Amino acid sequence: MNFSKSQQLFDRARGVIPGGVNSPVRAWRGVGGTPPFIARGQGSHIFDADGNEYIDYIGSWGPLLLGHRHPQILAAIEEALTRGTSFGAPTEQEIDLAETIRAMVPSMEMVRLVNSGTEATMSALRVARGFTGRDITIKFEGCYHGHVDSLLVKAGSGVATLGLPDSPGVPKGFSDTTITVPYNNTVAVAEAFATHKGKIAAVIVEPVCGNMGCIPPAPGFLESLRTITTADDTLLIFDEVMTGFRVAPGGAQELYGIKPDMTTLGKVIGGGLPIAAYGGREEIMAHVAPSGPIYQAGTLSGNPLAVSAGLAMLRYIQTHPEIYQGFDEATEALAASAPRGITVNRVGSMMTWFFTPASVVDYDTAKHSETSRFKRFFHAMIERGIYLPPSQFEALFVSTAHTTEDLARTVSAAKESFEIANG
Ligand code: KE4
Image (cartoon, rainbow, N blue to C red; front, side, top):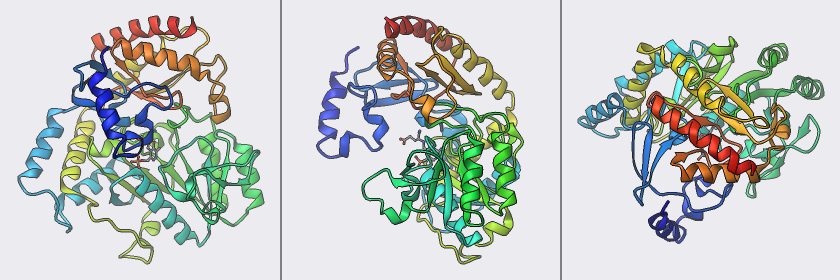
């Protein structure tokens, strides 16, 4: 494949944008090489500046459940455009979207719209601390909740460890109140609660992890989080920015039957436009300004274009519940292409091929993956026109736009690429 135009653009971009990208993972640091600069997308395919065509399994990192340029999403945005782009004032469509979210995710009795997943998780944590009057929060190693200062934390070794900042610029005071424990480890969570009884404001968790690669919750893990948080009046926050509307119409909380106290959403609810949300029990959300004292605000929160795209997306999901069966079948076909020695984790249409024979249940086991083999696999797939997340520690996404031909081509390319990776 020829990447010369992308190379020129990448050189130019690095002169004015840090690393040449507006989000680090896009720079291909995890796999090396030049990231294609994308010119356009259509359905399940994207086209780069050199005219190369790919089957797209990133889907903008999750938002494009229906693929690129779905006609109903485009029509909604075009209709909204006839009325303007932004007002900084309440609109009827924001109520429609909040009511639709509540109908699909009933634990979200009240909803606040924001502009990114990071804003949603940052705000949810602030509300949890303000509501409980406590400062400590628990997160899980390998889970990513956006670039919130207090969540950019790398645990010390062991469990129930108060975290250390994982990024320069995060004052130690911010991370001092964050405990990081291994995912799927209920003993570690219990130890943290025993050590900090009555002081933990919230546990925030990806109910299906996507940010260390796809890792499902172990049987009983989410139930144990629900039990232990309830017992200590701690709020359970499901970060469903990635899983919301993707693993089921009502997200992971519907799939696993667990009712969190708060939920964060993003990605899919905007259909590709910038929007996110947080919400939960009315008694909690009543504390959010201006109805309560916990401040949170945003110039473009509830933006009419993003809201219109989100409404079209959610209404499509509501009227096409069969897509989830389709996701299972399509993604299972990809999963089945993995040879011995590759561990596949999949929940619905999110999936990861881990280059390790051992089961992957948390960050430590995910890190056993041989990233050198993943890199060879990744580049072999790109050469065959298959566009995967450029990291072993990300999930790929299947959309309704992926055809049986796309999947057959991908399976065939994967078989060749696994050979090359293992060669
Ligand atoms: P944003 O601030 O990027 O909209 O959302 C942050 C976030 C919060 N919670 C979860 C579970 C998430 O997966 C994310 C963002 N996901 C990454 C993909 N691993 C976004 C890709 C990127 O950082 O460019």
